[in-house]
Amino acid sequence: MSNDALSTLYSENKSWLQAWLSKKLGCSHHAADVAQDAFLRILQLQRKEGALPSLKQPRAYLTTIAGRLVYDHFRRQSLEKAYLESLAHLPEVQMPSPQEQLIVQETLLELDSLFDRLKPIIRTTFLLSQLEGLTYAAIAEQLNISERTVKRYMARAFEECIMASSL
Amino acid sequence: MISGNNNTINREVARAAAQWLMRLHDDAVSNEDIQLCEQWRQAHSDHEQAWQRAHSIQEKLGLLPVSTGMVTLNRKVRADRRHAMKTLAVLITAGPASYLGYNSSIRQAWSADYSTAKGELQRIELADGSVIHLNTNTIVDVIFDAHQRKLVLHQGELLVETGKDTLFASQLIRPFSVHTHQGEFRPIGTRFIVRNIDGNISTDLMVLEGKVKATTHLHSKLPIINAGQQLTIYNDRHSDIRPVEDYADAWSRGLLYARNMRLDHFLNEISRYRSGVLRCDPAIANLHISGSFQLKDSDKILQALPQTLPISLHFLTPYWVTVKEKTT
Image 1 (cartoon, each protein chain N blue to C red):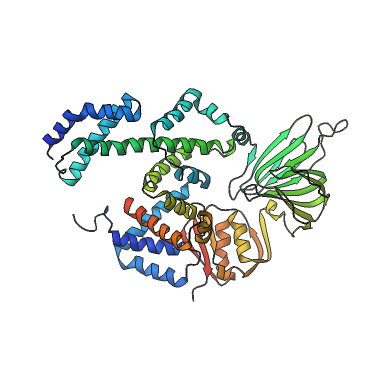
Image 2: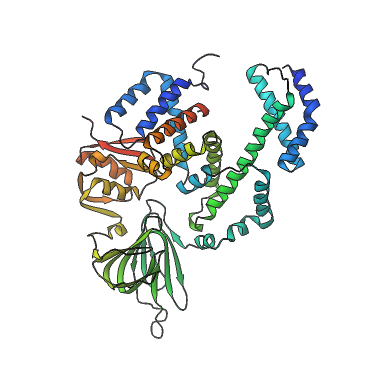
C-alpha cells in the first residue's frame, strides 16, 4: 500500500470508523481519538513492513486494528480500577508515596500487556509461582491440574514473555 | 533483517530458555541442572539475551507488592462498555475518596494506627504506659477511650507489656484487650504475644508473664492461660495448651535464637523478614542449625549459612533465593 492508498483509506473510511467506534465506546470524543490512533497504527505498520498487503476488505482490516485499540482501552481502565481497589485495602500508614505509586503503575501497565497474551489459566499459574512463590506441587493442587501441566504452563509463560518483551 | 538484531529473538532459543527457567524455578531442581543451565547461557550470546529478557520481567514483578500484583494482573478483563462505564461513573460522581470509603471493612483498614513493613520492628509506648512491640509485617489498631483500651491485630505479631492505667488510676479501670479474627484476649497484669501470620486462619497466644483470659468469637470456654503456656485458636476450635518455646520474644530485641532448629523451619522464619521467595531444597530441610541472628539484615544471615552448613545459595533474582545442597 502506498501513501496514496493510505490517504484514500483514511478519507473514505474515517467517518465510518468513527461512527463504529462511537457505538463501541459510547463516547464520540473518545471515538475520534481512537480512530486517529488506528490510522497512526496502520502508518507505523506500513513503515515497519515497507508496505501493507493489498486490502480487499479495508473496513474489516480497520475494525480489526481499531477493535484491538478498544480492547486495550478497556483493559487499561480495568487495570486502573483494580489498582485503586488494591490501594484501598492498605492501611494509611502503608500507602505508597506518589512516586512509588507511579513506579508500580508503570510496571503494571507494562506487565499487563505482556500477560494479556497468556491464557488465563497459564497466567494464574505463572503468577502463583512468580509472585506468590508457590511450589509447582502447591499450584497443581490449588488449580486442580497435574504437576506436569503446571510445568508445561510455566515453560509456555516464560517463552511468551521472552518473545514479547524487549530489553 | 540482520540476525542478532536487538529486537528479534529466535523462537527456538526462547523455547529452550523457557525450559531452563521452568526447571530452575522447580523446588526439586538439581545441582546438575543449575550447572547445565549455566553452560547453556554461556554457549551463545542469543541464549544469554533470552535469559536476560525473562530476568528483567521477574525483576519488574519483584517491584510489585504481592497483594497488588495478584489482584491487578490476574483480574478478569471485562472488555465491554457497559461494565467499564458503570465503574467510571462511580469514580467520577463519587470521587476516589468516597469510592474507597463505602465498604466498611476497607474503612477499618484505613484507620489502622501502626504498621511495620517486612523486616521492620517497632517499639511503641502507648498513652497508658503500656508498651507494644510490632514484629515484621504487622498491622495494629489502637483504640483508647474513656471505657476501654483495645488493640486490634489485623496481621502479624504483637508483644504486649501492659502498664498500670495512669489516666483513671484511682476511680476507674479501663479494661485492656487484644482482638483478632479468632478471639479476644484480656491480660491480668502481664506480658504476652498475640500472633496472626497465616492470613487470619488462626491466632497464637503466648503468655510470658502473668495470666491471660482468652475468649473465642464462638464463646467456647477456655481456661485461663498462665505464664509459660501457649495456645492456638482457629475459627471453629482450639489447640491443646503447650509450653511456650524459649526465646519466643527474642524478636522484640531484634534477634532470632535457634536451638537445634530444622533448616526449613529456620528459613521459614527468616522469610517473614524479607520480600520475595526463599526456597529450601527438601534434601537439606532436616539439617539443624543453632545460634543467634540479627534480624535487621536477613541477606547477611543467609550469606553466613554456607560457612556453617553444607549448603549453597542460589540467587535467581534478588527476590528469589533457593538454598540447596553444597555442590561438590
